[in-house]
Image (tube, rainbow, N blue to C red; front, side, top):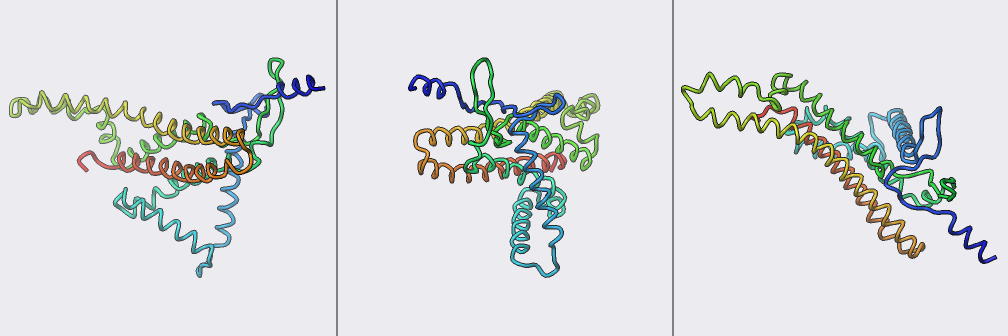
Length: 277
């Protein structure tokens, strides 16, 4: 009996993998637990928006007042970066959507009992436990997609606000190249200054790629590490010990969502401002 119980115990394994675990297939499309979480978050956000929209009143109640205070607080933070309430209002729906989506995904993996609901799959003669829910931002695919959307949006807004010519000159400084033959007689230093401007443009181009890597790895690393830490603490002592760390991860999830949103807003502000500004 003891050998049988030991074999049963060792057969089922549960490890925190870096990659999201597949839980189902839909016509060849693999659905992972992080993707399922992201869908649940999107549905929750849509449902919340519908409820709020239907219950907006001219004379606000306590709940509406609370939401208006949150919105006003965020607009105040945005103003400190944009320097313009008009810009803050334009960027608000996009940036706040980022914040809410990331925040809920960060917190979904912290719900008690979530990690214990799943299925057992067989792979290579071994059994593995795969949870149905995993924080979407604990998956590199999700954070990379969010980073790409945020950086790409900053470029789109950049073209709209400053024009294509000013936008392209930020990276390939055609204007600096054109100035060399015109100013070389009056200002010989143009041979030194303008090549530096051209080189700076190439550095700007590389920095755009670095933005994507920085945004995605920072968010993924913090959230994934938090989930691993909680699982480790629960393995030592399931009752009581994980609680302080869980409250810490709730705070980390909030801070990381805010940092991601503010960084994307900063990129938007930079790309929508002329270089001399």
